[in-house]
Length: 268
Image (tube, rainbow, N blue to C red):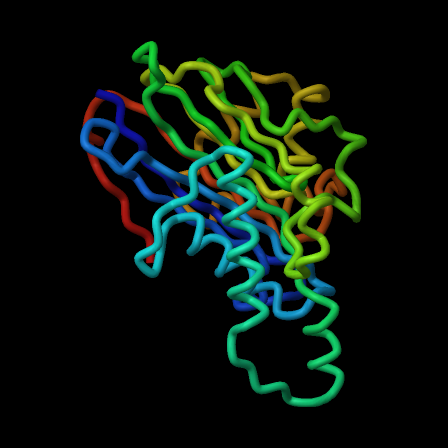
């Protein structure tokens, strides 16, 4: 029986503190035999939007089924219901505004890109992943150092300053549903596979590096991180070389296996 283990690495923008990190990550290892299914998500808050850090937190909590709510299935109708509920909860939550400008910013709304993934068993017995995405956070399915599948299938020129995403304003919902991408039943998973979920700055770098440096080097590099300091150095080096933009950077690596880990490392 397959098992999943997730690890998250994050680096804030240069010149910011980790408390100003506007990305968010959530993982539920689940149980593919008895349930619930493993579920993973990343979100990226827009710096210029109102309180985007908390908007990201709300999206991740509701997608993962926090506060006693059922997790939303990854289909079009369920996603619409989930997005409507998230918008309603956001706009009706009690708030005390510090001044008129903060209240006006709230009225303009908040915004975040989003990628959610669930691993489950298909009708034919295969274990596979399904995913939903709004924006330029990307999932890469890798096996034996080779890319099996990418979702969404963005090219280097698709990464920009105005990505699709999840807005808090109700009138944005129709456009969001048009832009929403859903992948049901991706490539079958096998022991040793890895899923890399990357926010926009890193996803952009990966797409470009695959062409520039080749698959083996890129996936080996992203697979070897065992401590946050190694990931921090990696990001700093790419920023210094100007091959990665200065933005919050988050990587979630999900290892797929058919056995328990031989050891566990805890970093604090």
